[in-house]
Length: 222
Image (tube, rainbow, N blue to C red; front, top):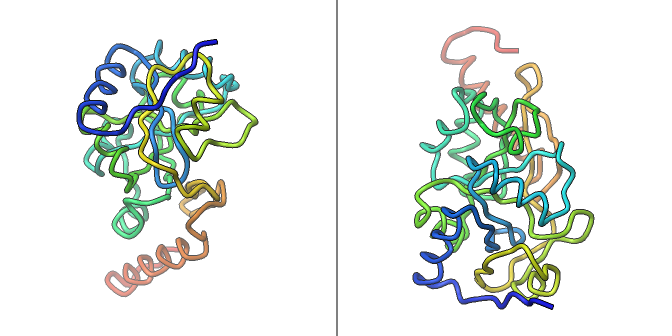
């Protein structure tokens, strides 16, 4: 049985991980919630391998991590006004926002939903990997679909006996809830998945934005 041994997440191993991603590989890495699986989100072959490794249903989309909000343009042509305040308030952090996806994105990434989930992680290893790769990465949870997500490099090495090329050991992650998933429905915020950030707090933040817009313009934004 092939066992993948974790490597310490230092500059050398992160650079090696980036080379693996450029070659279409899969790398496990820590985030502020659980460990995730990184692949090139623009490479259909790498995404297909990611689905195979996780035994994940093909119709489910894959969320991505960006290094900063300027990378959003790689995935979407529109950032809703309401999202700007949420990004300024909650990023980096465990808030995944659902955007309208560019039609050029691979179907495996969007699950043919026409949308893509994006967040900016505060985890230093995650951001170092994005910087070394010089591009966003996928961040689907490191687990076999249906099983609990891994919170340590050791759990990943025990769970996956094949398919992952490298495990970056950044220490244990908090686990618990994942990121909060938030989208828009007819211009209103909706909670798609509960997570570490309480949706009521997110909603209050958005309400303050609309209140300030009303005061500024006098228009009805309902």
